[in-house]
Image 1 (cartoon, rainbow, N blue to C red):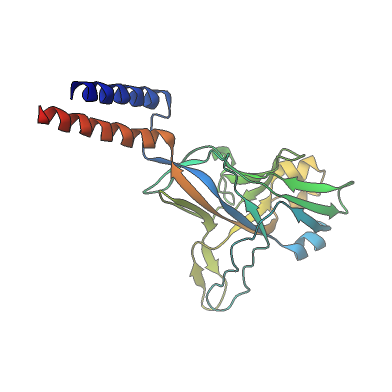
Image 2: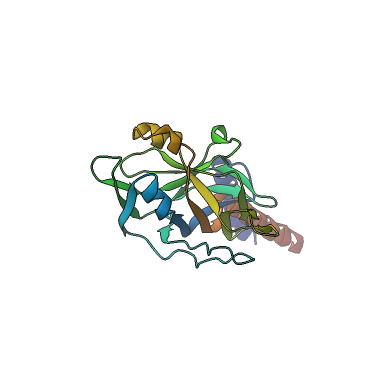
Length: 248
């Protein structure tokens, strides 16, 4: 029994050291997979931005088309971006609280624009948060390109709806459809708007700044952040030691 207790004490000490070297906050979760679905308003891109989507590569199926009440147009996502296991987006639940990190994606979107010389491609997009970007029409979340431009592309509009559990995370939108009567629809879409960095970096007309160019929704899977798992391990080892000592 003494040898068993000594072994358990050694494991407990190792777990405590691991907790000390990891994130100090418990009950956090980290994104490890899923899909982000986007719709690019092709009519607006073509009429205003003079741009068309030529092809995609490394993409997956988006979430199914979503119908909202009173028969407004279907919100059909067209492109699915796979969420990478290298994502380090961490959050707390009950209620949702962003901690740190970003959601990384695979996939490339190839475009042709009359306003930009040469080929244009977005890829390896990341969903990130910056409190400094929060404004009347911006939530602070944004989509950045990590393929060639390496700048924020789209700001996500302020009517954002985020829900997280121990196994999943949904970043979508909420709002009111302008029907008669108006219909509220939660957890459906988040509008994407051209970022200042993209408009200025590509020498585009200033009128494009903040223009709604599509919508986005993230459906991610999540697992406990490592320090949370260590917390459970420490609790289990402590319980075993307590029971063994009571048997003496």
